Amino acid sequence: MSYKMKDFLDKFFDLCREYQQDIPPQKMAEVLREYADRIDG
Image (cartoon, rainbow, N blue to C red; front, top):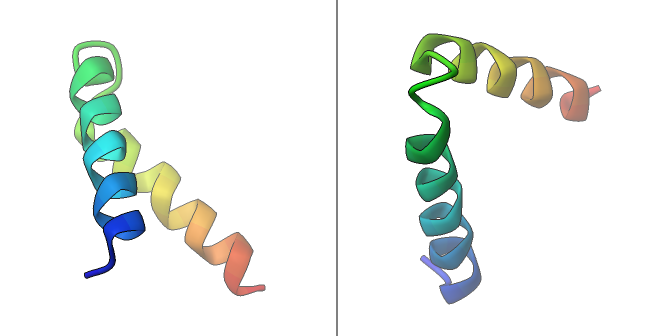
């Protein structure tokens, strides 16, 4: 895994942990799936 990808994932998971009290993990996953669908076209 490239350094940039690892750095991104570390920051992303830190952000998820920070907000998991307010946003359930299932909702975060739903948002990510929706994002992936949009970029896939």
